Image (cartoon, rainbow, N blue to C red; front, side, top):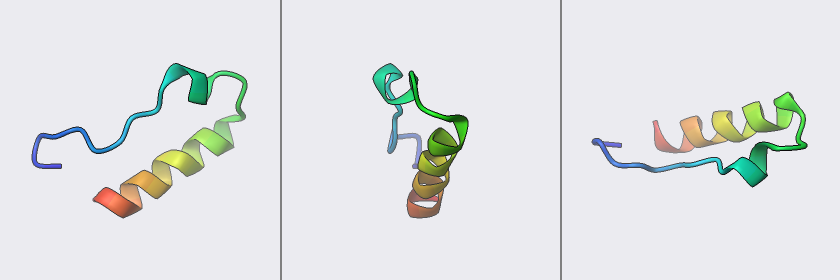
Length: 34
């Protein structure tokens, strides 16, 4: 936000997880910060 990092998904949070779980994480972050 305003050029600053507000959310990050690290490799260990992606590996072995279904795509929908990762998408939900990104959607939640978008709704919170955008």
